[in-house]
Length: 191
Image 1 (cartoon, rainbow, N blue to C red):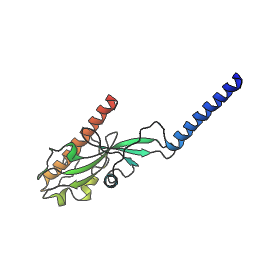
Image 2: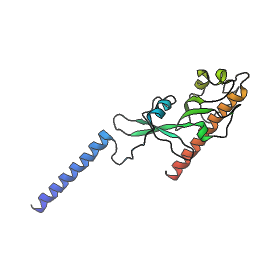
Image 3: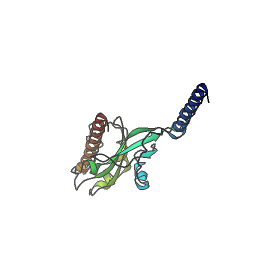
Image 4: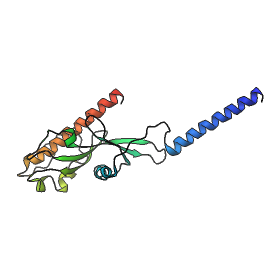
């Protein structure tokens, strides 16, 4: 084979390789992207209650454990980070209400907006009429983590259950702010 033919073959082979990688990236996502280790099916069912639009939930990670929440672009296959989901008792274990800690699942976007909360467990004697009704959880949707989260101001007050409501609101606020700080710190450190 003459030198000119070798060059033409080399360029053609290179073009085919580039086109193959472009096709793989277009149809399957980036071949260099790290796969996301996903939460269990059981966890995913609960996580969807605070982040229904998500496609992927990662396993928990971080010093203060949280799930990363992703949306997958149907055209490119790229995963976009939507936000985080965490359990309050894992982030703020010493935060109590009247009878003890209130376990709440919290969903939060990357810009610090609460997507929803779900009361998972508690031992509050007045919880059945203060934090268990769906109206309690609904008032947290679309709240900024910079809001006050104060009973009687931006959280509905409930007579005879002040400590319970304040404790639940406080643990959501403090937990969300802790996760946001941790994520920003990890981003700054390049993790």
